[in-house]
Image 1 (cartoon, chains in turn green, cyan):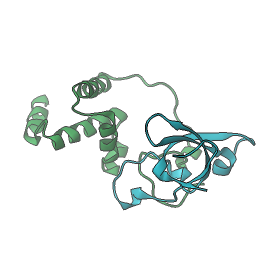
Image 2 (cartoon, rainbow over the protein chains, first blue to last red):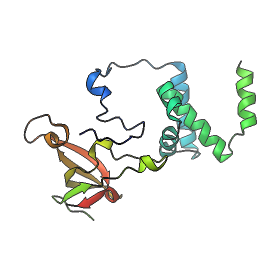
Image 3 (tube, one colour):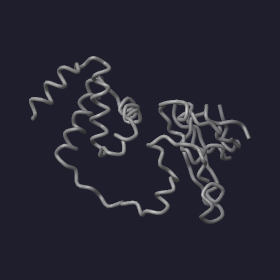
Image 4 (cartoon, each protein chain N blue to C red):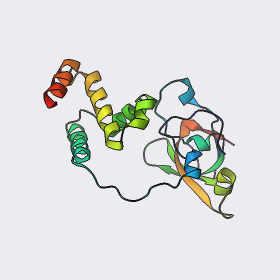
Length: 103
Length: 77
């Protein structure tokens, strides 16, 4: 059943750890951050800048160590940011300036 | 085009080991034998049924797993 081949990090069906640890299926409250990330994704979709497939592709391209460290919506914003940088919608300098201004 | 009732086998392939890629074919179904249930929409996408016990070694006779799979992952069986 569990084939002895490395799996992509998002492909969790049948992973042995879920056979030993109960899965937390309780609903989670959304934080303001979560809602904001979701809103950004929806705006980018409505403006035809970025679709959900690109979001998923970006999430699956996150380096594995980061992928496991990040929360669900942190993965989203990481993917969104990477997509916007690649497309030139924002520049790295603009991103750094915006992040510095937040501190 | 695959017909309902046709037996198919999911390719025993692991593209994720060759570099980053976008994959929706579950790891646990590679190489498994299934049956076409229906074609979905305008894409080469199908509902494929698998015998639950054959894949997971649990459940009762007649239990099945229904998964959406793209045609290029399927081989006649």
